[in-house]
Image (cartoon, rainbow, N blue to C red; front, side, top):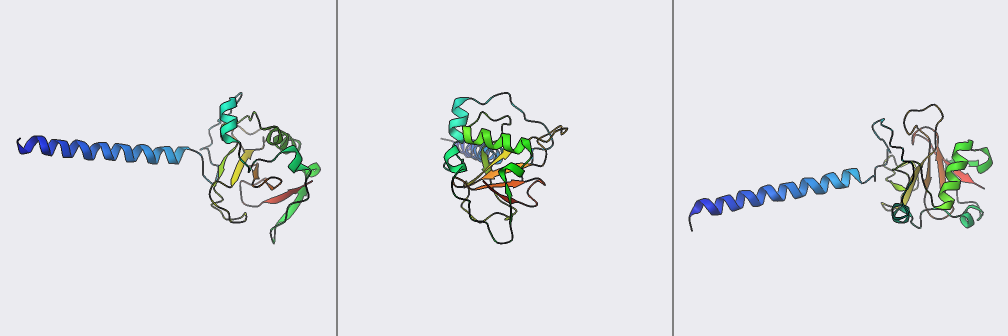
Length: 169
């Protein structure tokens, strides 16, 4: 066997390995476990969410109606609280959807929140989930979010992760 075909096999193998690596990186980047929740300003509103997608997004981090009435969650030092009744109507609607398990109006709802800013208590990656709170007049997802952790552990931000308040019953 000549040297040229062997060299070609090595080159082709290297190119294939690079393509697979690029695909894996692209998959990780687009799967939605960012902490900034940025969507490039483009709206990603979807009409409904399939049962499969809702089931795959459902985790122990999602709250339930029972958890919503559980004892108030612990409040991290320096973090304020907000009662459910004090939240904007759109945030209360988002809580209702979380408690019902969806369907959610945005494709990124229920995806991993990475807590890259480090403003919530440190947890393993995948612990927190984020949900959009509609902002009237906004042409994109806006700045308001609800972040969930363990059952009953919910946080509200109105300023795109700059500050958080613990949601209490």
